[in-house]
Structure formats: structure tokens, C-alpha cells
Length: 178
Image 1: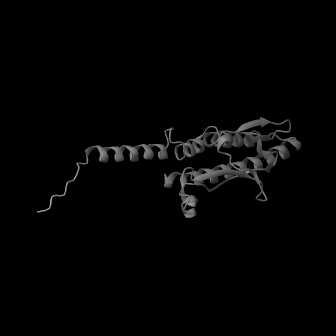
Image 2: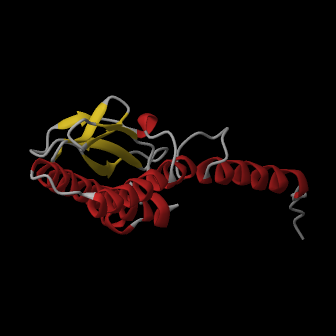
Image 3: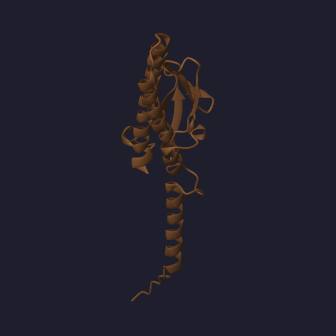
């Protein structure tokens, strides 16, 4: 679980966990989409065909969709708006939202937030808005619901089973003095 979503007691593990790798990749792709939007708008306004740029952006959007559930709206000027839930991540030539992982609790070791470019929190707990993709799967399996198929749920069930086995097979010890 630590390698997937980190350990809330040790923030150093958060920097090297798989979820952080996905978040960094998502933020990088969002920045590239914003840059490509800018180039596409500029190219279109100069009367040149931005087909190569459109292809690059479409590839980035496909890669982004594999990592996180996003809603994409194509604008009249050739740009796209990228949203997670109701929160704009890219609008025109600007990246408006940045994903960030912060330490959570024992039951939920990481919290996914969406922040603006000045660090203000737009969405304090964005896990529920991330409905699909590799990041959503990783956060779900590393999450807290003991009734779900999560690492914590499986470990809690295994611990309960081990305790039950020990109590069922442990013979009573009688101490007879010599």
C-alpha cells in the first residue's frame, strides 16, 4: 500500500508513491494541453492549419483520459476546456487547476486536492470527482473502505481471520506444578 499511495505517517513516502507519479504526469499533460491550445489559437488566427498541433493535443487528451476521468469541451476558437467534475483544469491557454496529493489518515493515506496556480484549494477532497482512470483505480485500491476490495479491507479481513484461527486452535494451557 505504501508504494501505491504512501504512508500518512511518513510524508517522504508520498513523494515516491505511484499515485504521485500519476499526479505529476497529469499535471504535466495539462500544462502541455494549455500550451497546445495557445499554439492552436495563434495558428488559426494567422490562417494556417494547426492539424499537427491538433493531433498532438488529441494524443495528450487520450493519455490524460487513461489516467483520470476528464470532461473535454471543444471551443469555437480551436481550444479545449478540460474539467474534472465541475472544476476547470484547462481553459483556453491557461492551466487553471493542479492536482496535489497530501497526507491523509490511517484509513485513507492520501487526499487528492485540486489547487489553483497560486496554491489556493479549489477542491479539498477530489477523490470522488475522479471517477475513472488509473489514478482513480489506484486511490480506490489504496483507500479505506473495509467492505470494498481495497488493500486495507483485505488486510483487515486477514488480520481478523488470523486472530480467529489463533483463538480457535490455541489449546488451553494448564500449569501443573511438579
